[in-house]
Image (cartoon, rainbow, N blue to C red; front, top):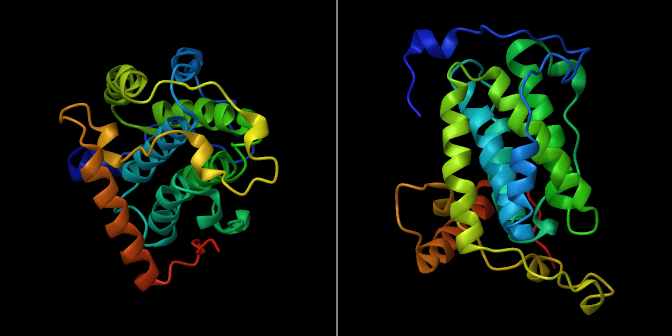
Length: 222
């Protein structure tokens, strides 16, 4: 996802922090329809992938480490929701055409990962919003659409939706396990074969790294 510095810095989109998504012009219904065919965990990973597109779009245009730290926490939360702590970014600190979209991306991503197991509408809302946000702010939105059209059928093949067994875990002791098979970051790259063993190794490395780094958005589940 390389862009020239000039292209990266060019903010040729309408942004008004008071209008939320009113200036978006894209329809994400086709993404939601396709996401119905993939597991809960794969839907959450897709949300993280969409967040990463937005985060990447503004890379180098701000010096705040928090969007990257949120990304780390989000990947951990795809394993289990308890890895991600409850938090809010101060809206007054996150305004304008760079920090505003990042705040919105974090705000829609967080509940999808932490509440989506019991409130699947949170995942749907995040998929819808993050898709339209990305298509709005990216200088080459066709690249995001092409990625979605490639990755959605890939996820449907690798991680198909499973019947939901709501009463198997009445006390929510095994929330992460009910999401379906582990989905590694490589699943979002249609150009390479997916290796479940490599995915497990990637998460082992990630958890080892974040525990040493003291990420404020990550907690260790008991």
